[in-house]
Image (tube, rainbow, N blue to C red; front, side, top):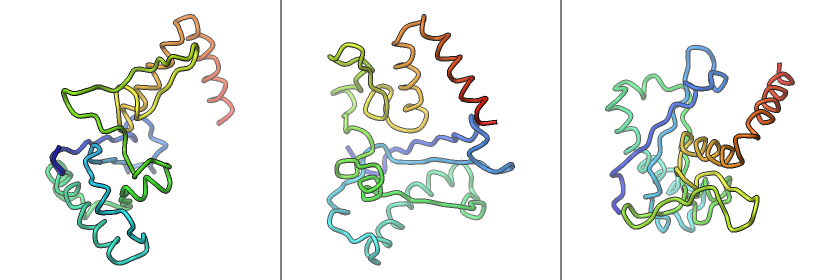
Length: 166
């Protein structure tokens, strides 16, 4: 229920070294759907008020990162801070949400199946939830739900795609 009581961190460049130049990494840290949209609603993204609020709200994430990497602010090369307005604009998320607001103990993320035969879903609104690792996991779960007999053709397709990139 409270803000600034949890942060999730992933380092996707550990699994895909093409995401950052050699010797660098990508860190993705976020609060799990606890940001109150009302403080952002109606703000002009170009205003000083927005820039100030964005800076203020990012401090909790820096605080968490500094517990793990004390000199992170001196070492960071590129920093991009997203807000609910960022998510609303670029991700087309209702009220800038970052995944569904599911209260612990009161619900859970739905699995990939749907009432429509043959239609599966994956992403941050399905199990296991929000964030890069969870979304990738939801894709794996959906793919595996298709059936083990489809694994060979899927691997063949992925290999063909990989070959066209080199």
